[in-house]
Amino acid sequence: MPETFLTLVNGTEYCSTYVRVASFYTPACKRCDGSGKFSYNNSLKSDRCFLCEGARYTTNVAFTHEEATENARARAVAKDKRDTKAKAKRQTEWVEGQAKRDADALAHEARVEAQKTEKAAWGHLPGTVGDKVKVTGTVSIATNLDTQYGTSRLIAIDTADKQTVKMFTTAGWCWDVARGDTLTIQATIKEFGEWEGKAETLLLRPKSV
Ligand SMILES: [Zn+2]
Image (cartoon, rainbow, N blue to C red; front, side):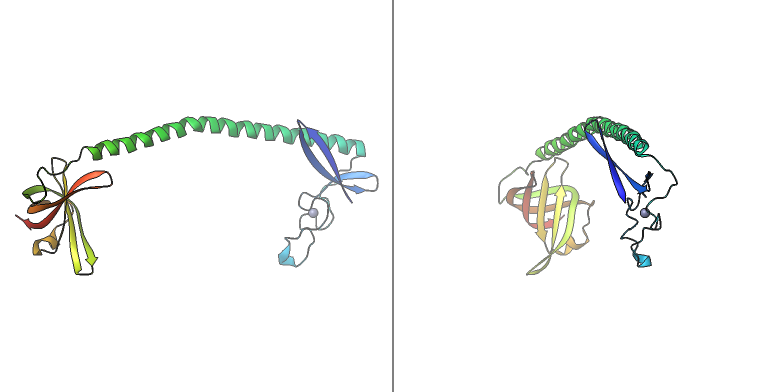
């Protein structure tokens, strides 16, 4: 029958299992831990351990009880040494990684801050609601929107003075306008607003000129 030998090393208990044959101890099969049975052997529809084939051990080593105790101790010490080394390595890697994580976090913060600053630099068109304006810039949005009244086109233009104007239109000229185009329009200021932290001016009745 399998017998376990427990060894305490640096506060951790390590276990070695031996199979007792007459008065000798043989290291137990690693797969079945000396039981001779292993339930994952489903393909053969058998619970016999496929490593030791039911013998419960895989070596011919025979220890006395004293030798087995010493062997268990030596294995425990070696395992503890490996575990300690691995733990120290993981800790070192974590500490080394911290500098990178800190740098990444700072870089992310800086990017967010730069985006905020960039957005804050954008302003509304000069003028007041109802004013007729002429705006030239680069199209940053040109997309179709399906509404209950049919398809409408949303167009946004960014001016060189960092103003975004937006308009919804179904005028004939609007359908060929694409992102990246340079466009000049005449329209009426409808409203001053903000979109995701960036000022924008909403226009009415835009005409391409
Ligand atoms: Zn086995």
